[in-house]
Length: 248
Image (cartoon, rainbow, N blue to C red; front, side):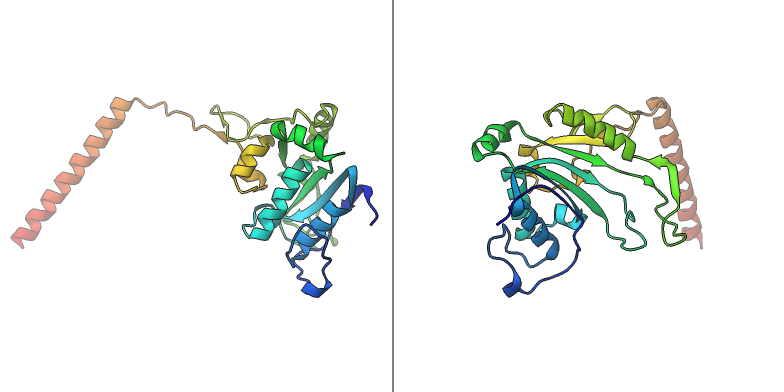
């Protein structure tokens, strides 16, 4: 019955437990270890406590009723502060599964949560490089690539987010179309309502803003002329081929 103010965890993935060995007080009926571990942490967190946990990406978008229901409870009953998408291979050579990090806290009270949920937002950050080569393995680990590392930027963005008391997530709103030529965004946010409309899908890519394509510089009239010329050439070739067949 102990409750904890801080939980940091990287639990094992892809396991299935026998039903008789699973606690009855968890917020999920699943037998999958990744859902059960998350459920244990949600249950063990003290009011006002905060948790950061590594999860397989499949947990973020899985479509089974157990996946959706656990994410619903996480989004609606807790303060989901951030979803950090990690690059593939971040745990090589030990594991190759694509992962993410969930950061959430338990509200101090139910009343406190209900007063915030209408305006609540979920922050997403996409780490594309973590300072290590994603493909090479050398000496039992991945060689360092300090020139390719998004983690310092993530920490700076998190600091600004924290200073706003987690009310103003950095980045742009989910679903926005950015002007052509814009830099690819690393972080963005979505309202709880928008997340709920998407079956509580928490995959960062689901909400990533898109960049508009640059309008072509070609003269439309010239494009039409070139197309007509090609079509005439095709038509002439077909007529020539038809005469050869008829005269054969």
